[in-house]
Length: 91
Image (cartoon, rainbow, N blue to C red):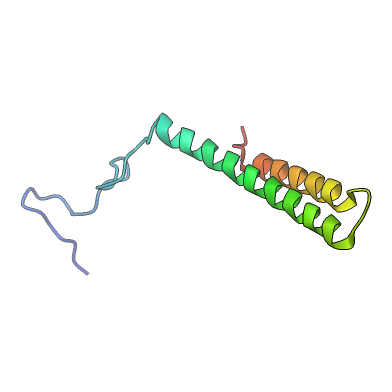
């Protein structure tokens, strides 16, 4: 295979130190904000699903003490915290 040569004599492949066309080197604080906002919404959704499932399970089994509500709430809370811990950068 031959390398494609431009008019200036350089190959068409970008060098490793140059960013590819259309990609930014550093997206800045906007992407960091969106990243953590997404993590927050994911935690909210996970805990919300656990609470809702526990509520309806207690309602279905007609329990006087909300066993499923409490247990699924804590399981979803600790599950979302575990996922957050796994996503943190390791330094």
